[in-house]
Each structure stands twice: as C-alpha cells, then as structure tokens.
Image 1 (cartoon, rainbow, N blue to C red):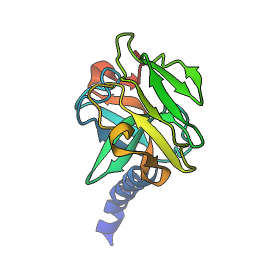
Image 2: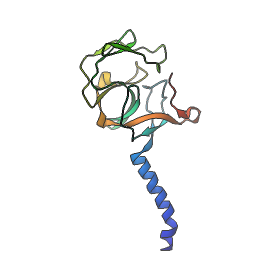
Image 3: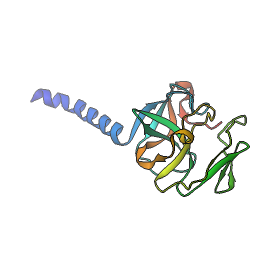
Length: 164
C-alpha cells in the first residue's frame, strides 16, 4: 500500500497528460514544404483538437491515407471558387489572401461546383508544391483533426504562426 501512495501522483500526472493529448492539444510535425513560408518542414506545431468551428484561412490538420496533411481552408460549405491572375474569387467576389507572399503564384483554376455542407476546400500556402483540394478533392469536416496557430519548435519560431 505504501508504494501505491508514492506512485499515485505520477499516475495522476500520466493520466492528465494522456487525456490532454487525446482530447485537447497535441504536437504535430510539419512534413514537407507545402505550407512554406508560413510553416517550414519539420516544424512542430500545436494541434487544437477541441477547435471544430472552421473559418476561412484557418490552418487545419486532417487525415489523408496513413498520414496527416496541414493546409489552409480556402473554400467553405456553400461556396464556389476560382483563381484568375493569382487572385481568389469566392462566389464571384475577389477575396484578399494577405497571408501569402506577393510573389506567390496560383495557377488559374475553377471549382464551379458548390462545396457541400460538411466539406472544405483546402490549399497549401506553397501553391506550386502542394497536394491539396485541387488534386485530392474536398476535405470532410470529420477528417479534420483540428486547427493550429502556434509553433512549438524550432525555438527561433516559437509562438503564434506569423503570416507572410
């Protein structure tokens, strides 16, 4: 019984950490350059699992095959979108993407089907090197694990994710 009393604080700490990582927040490693320059390869970001109210330009982590992808929400349910001359149009209205560097190229394309309820159109910030909704299609809300807006590592980028 003495050992149980001594181990109890450690058991509680382990249990709390497991619960936090399972339901609230967990670290996620950026794999690849599709979110450059916003997020760099091998950075570790904090995934907010509890955040399920997605807005335009939120950075989300979602399941794709046996791994996860990190992209930015561009199109919301009920919208159509297209790019023309490096500019985003949602329901025929021009929308500024202030987070992108000025020299970012987005090739012209049209998503003329209305995005159904419960789905999102996502893109990487590195538009010429990103596997995103242009190739893989829409991402369902159930596939999205949460949002991220905080870099944990490397320490020289520690803090809120900065836009370009």
